[in-house]
Image (spheres, rainbow, N blue to C red):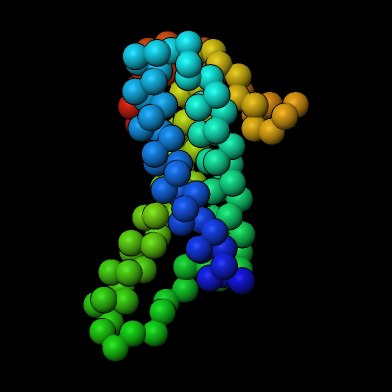
Amino acid sequence: LARRLHWIGVPLVASQIATGFALGWVAEHRPEASAGLAVAHVRIGLAVVVLAGLRLAVKGLGKRASAAPARSALAGRAHALLYAGMLVLPVTGLAAFDAAGIGVELLPGVMAPDIVRTDLDAADRAFLAH
Protein backbone atom coordinates (compact mmCIF):
# COMPACT_ATOMS: atom_id res chain seq x y z
CA LEU A 1 0.00 0.00 0.00
CA ALA A 2 2.82 2.44 0.87
CA ARG A 3 4.41 1.88 -2.54
CA ARG A 4 1.09 2.53 -4.32
CA LEU A 5 0.58 5.71 -2.33
CA HIS A 6 4.11 6.76 -3.26
CA TRP A 7 3.57 6.26 -6.99
CA ILE A 8 0.18 7.98 -6.90
CA GLY A 9 1.84 10.91 -5.14
CA VAL A 10 4.79 11.34 -7.51
CA PRO A 11 2.81 12.72 -10.48
CA LEU A 12 0.68 14.79 -8.10
CA VAL A 13 3.76 16.43 -6.59
CA ALA A 14 5.19 17.04 -10.08
CA SER A 15 1.92 18.60 -11.26
CA GLN A 16 1.75 20.66 -8.07
CA ILE A 17 5.18 22.11 -8.76
CA ALA A 18 4.21 22.84 -12.37
CA THR A 19 0.89 24.48 -11.45
CA GLY A 20 2.64 26.50 -8.74
CA PHE A 21 5.16 27.98 -11.18
CA ALA A 22 2.45 28.49 -13.81
CA LEU A 23 0.19 30.17 -11.25
CA GLY A 24 2.97 32.56 -10.27
CA TRP A 25 3.50 33.56 -13.90
CA VAL A 26 -0.21 33.81 -14.73
CA ALA A 27 -0.99 35.81 -11.58
CA GLU A 28 1.69 38.31 -12.54
CA HIS A 29 0.96 38.57 -16.27
CA ARG A 30 -2.74 37.69 -16.60
CA PRO A 31 -4.33 37.89 -13.14
CA GLU A 32 -7.84 37.60 -14.56
CA ALA A 33 -6.98 34.08 -15.75
CA SER A 34 -5.47 32.80 -12.50
CA ALA A 35 -8.58 31.69 -10.58
CA GLY A 36 -8.97 28.29 -12.25
CA LEU A 37 -5.29 27.51 -11.91
CA ALA A 38 -5.39 28.53 -8.25
CA VAL A 39 -8.28 26.12 -7.62
CA ALA A 40 -6.34 23.31 -9.32
CA HIS A 41 -3.23 24.12 -7.28
CA VAL A 42 -5.17 24.08 -4.00
CA ARG A 43 -6.99 20.83 -4.77
CA ILE A 44 -3.88 19.01 -5.99
CA GLY A 45 -2.09 20.28 -2.87
CA LEU A 46 -4.87 18.90 -0.69
CA ALA A 47 -4.53 15.51 -2.41
CA VAL A 48 -0.75 15.57 -1.82
CA VAL A 49 -1.22 16.34 1.89
CA VAL A 50 -3.77 13.54 2.28
CA LEU A 51 -1.55 11.04 0.44
CA ALA A 52 1.55 12.09 2.41
CA GLY A 53 -0.36 11.68 5.67
CA LEU A 54 -1.68 8.28 4.62
CA ARG A 55 1.75 7.12 3.54
CA LEU A 56 3.31 8.27 6.81
CA ALA A 57 0.56 6.47 8.72
CA VAL A 58 1.15 3.26 6.74
CA LYS A 59 4.93 3.26 6.54
CA GLY A 60 6.38 6.02 8.65
CA LEU A 61 9.85 7.42 8.13
CA GLY A 62 11.51 4.21 9.33
CA LYS A 63 15.01 3.23 8.31
CA ARG A 64 15.53 1.19 5.20
CA ALA A 65 17.91 -1.73 5.03
CA SER A 66 21.04 -0.78 3.12
CA ALA A 67 24.55 -2.09 2.71
CA ALA A 68 25.84 1.45 3.20
CA PRO A 69 24.71 3.04 6.49
CA ALA A 70 25.76 6.53 5.37
CA ARG A 71 23.59 6.19 2.26
CA SER A 72 20.66 5.00 4.34
CA ALA A 73 21.04 7.95 6.73
CA LEU A 74 21.20 10.38 3.82
CA ALA A 75 18.09 8.83 2.23
CA GLY A 76 16.27 9.08 5.56
CA ARG A 77 17.12 12.77 5.88
CA ALA A 78 16.07 13.43 2.29
CA HIS A 79 12.72 11.70 2.86
CA ALA A 80 12.17 13.66 6.08
CA LEU A 81 12.83 16.94 4.23
CA LEU A 82 10.48 15.97 1.40
CA TYR A 83 7.69 15.08 3.83
CA ALA A 84 8.29 18.27 5.81
CA GLY A 85 7.90 20.22 2.56
CA MET A 86 4.74 18.35 1.62
CA LEU A 87 3.22 19.20 4.99
CA VAL A 88 4.59 22.75 5.54
CA LEU A 89 4.18 24.22 2.05
CA PRO A 90 0.38 23.92 2.11
CA VAL A 91 0.32 25.88 5.37
CA THR A 92 2.43 28.68 3.85
CA GLY A 93 0.15 28.71 0.80
CA LEU A 94 -2.95 28.94 2.96
CA ALA A 95 -1.33 31.70 5.04
CA ALA A 96 -0.49 33.61 1.85
CA PHE A 97 -4.05 33.43 0.54
CA ASP A 98 -5.45 34.34 3.98
CA ALA A 99 -3.12 37.31 4.38
CA ALA A 100 -4.15 38.50 0.91
CA GLY A 101 -7.80 38.28 1.98
CA ILE A 102 -8.57 35.46 -0.44
CA GLY A 103 -10.71 32.61 0.86
CA VAL A 104 -9.52 29.10 0.00
CA GLU A 105 -12.13 26.58 -1.09
CA LEU A 106 -10.64 23.15 -0.39
CA LEU A 107 -13.54 21.24 -1.91
CA PRO A 108 -16.81 22.51 -3.35
CA GLY A 109 -18.55 24.24 -0.46
CA VAL A 110 -15.73 23.53 2.05
CA MET A 111 -13.69 26.60 2.94
CA ALA A 112 -10.33 26.39 4.69
CA PRO A 113 -10.22 28.04 8.09
CA ASP A 114 -8.65 31.48 8.34
CA ILE A 115 -5.24 31.11 9.98
CA VAL A 116 -3.86 34.67 9.72
CA ARG A 117 -5.27 38.18 9.55
CA THR A 118 -5.37 40.12 6.30
CA ASP A 119 -2.03 41.88 5.73
CA LEU A 120 -0.85 42.42 2.16
CA ASP A 121 2.81 42.80 3.15
CA ALA A 122 2.63 39.51 5.04
CA ALA A 123 0.88 37.96 2.01
CA ASP A 124 3.81 38.94 -0.21
CA ARG A 125 6.26 37.37 2.24
CA ALA A 126 4.14 34.22 2.58
CA PHE A 127 3.85 33.83 -1.20
CA LEU A 128 7.65 34.12 -1.44
CA ALA A 129 8.07 31.49 1.28
CA HIS A 130 5.59 29.27 -0.46
